[in-house]
Length: 401
Image 1 (cartoon, helix red, strand yellow):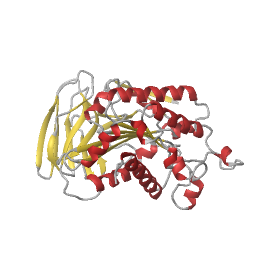
Image 2 (tube, rainbow, N blue to C red):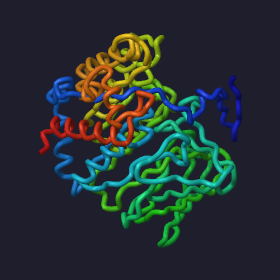
Image 3 (tube, rainbow, N blue to C red):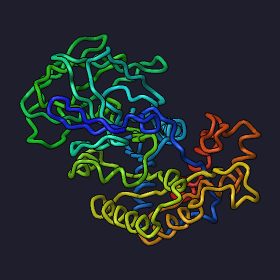
Image 4 (spheres, rainbow, N blue to C red):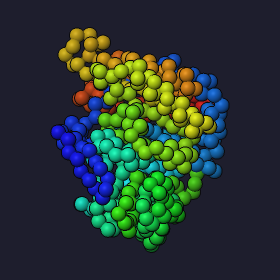
């Protein structure tokens, strides 16, 4: 059953069935890689050298990484461990881009978002229709005149940040930014229907209270938090539960300009699990969509390294006879298409399933406490182990010791 809602002029088409809920569990597989199964470093061209040099100079300038993905990314356990490993080695550059308000079923490894009830309406690109989605696929619509958001650190610290908001406004509004040291006010000018990042507020700490003095037609897409030092690694995790690669097609044309503003040195595409579970998936169409997306990223970000993370291993039919029958029908084809597409686009490919041990290896991971009982998602330890594998692969491709 579908219901049509209208919030401040924004038409939302939502599904009222439990499976369409933004908090529904995502059916995504989990698979790592072996080095020989990955795309060779040389095929990524000179961008690998650029990225390696950026890491070597991370103490003086930031390195920006943006990961797009499904539930594996939305939990920010896999990406969170990648962030921790990279920041431990090359410096903490900040938190990156996060949603503007809390998203049910989604978490951030470093921060917690809090809002009061009935101040915001959240619209998700996963199962709602709009032509307004920004980079990241979530938009937050004010329901009151002065809605507020609090950003808290999961672990106390003295880190200072710069913060800016991704927003869209029909008329100018104000943003109040308050931390323990005081309050700042910034004007958010009208954007003529486009998403843009607002003016930067410098030298703020967590917890951070942000209050929007909004007028009808103002929407928020996220917060970007970077270290005040403007150095180290920034790792943005843009995950949507249940997402496929095609979710990017639902975002407002021009979202690539917001991505460019983040100046990503590395873009990670971590989709494929939900495609693999779709028995009716048109593989030729999927291959064409992936090819088109990679070509567009290459045009928009010619100096950026692109990395495809293949779907992890998973089991769909537990009682079927033989490993092949137990696997999602499309899984092997999705992995092969991603591998070939990465090679053609001069991108890197990390085969997560191969890293786990190949087809049906998730059963052994589950027995070791590394995968959850759904035989799709991993435990925190499983995601940490996977991230260690991807981290080692990336460093090897970049020639970093």
